[in-house]
Image 1: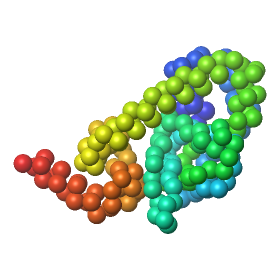
Image 2: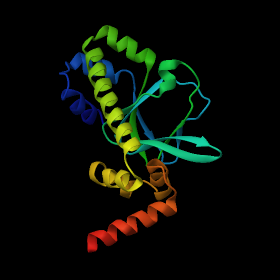
Image 3: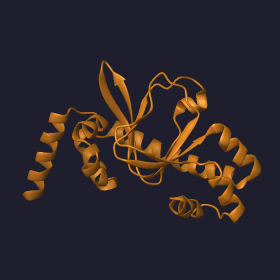
Image 4: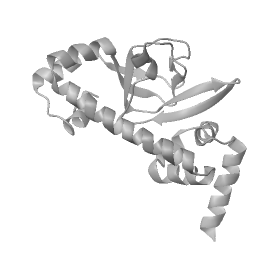
Length: 193
């Protein structure tokens, strides 16, 4: 698993053996079973996650209904807002599949960044990329119909259609599962004709 992580990092910065060993010394790799909740609403956390294999999702529970806000798959990072604000989480994070991820704490990141300043550069670049991606996703969501959202999902993240339960996909798209079924049927019919 470390090879997958180091290959990803090497796209942004080069690492010496000392730097690689420093990362490995923190024992950051975790295998998590499908269905495991990593963070619950109301909990505090210092942990950030990076998905090496698998899929995790973030969701809120509003009026006893789950509202999915994001899916994170291979080579995607997630730092819950509660880590930065040092307040209890407002949402849940759980594994949709058996997942292998890295788990790092804010304390660990401070230590690594002070010893190896290039990691701060890596974190800044990844944060900027993530912020831009989040803004684009938010704008697309706000300005598109449910059908456009689904078509965007098919185009940008087709793997999610197979990997994620339909009710979670529907929630993510801001519609009911029955509406998603009708929407998929309509799109299938259009493509036949």
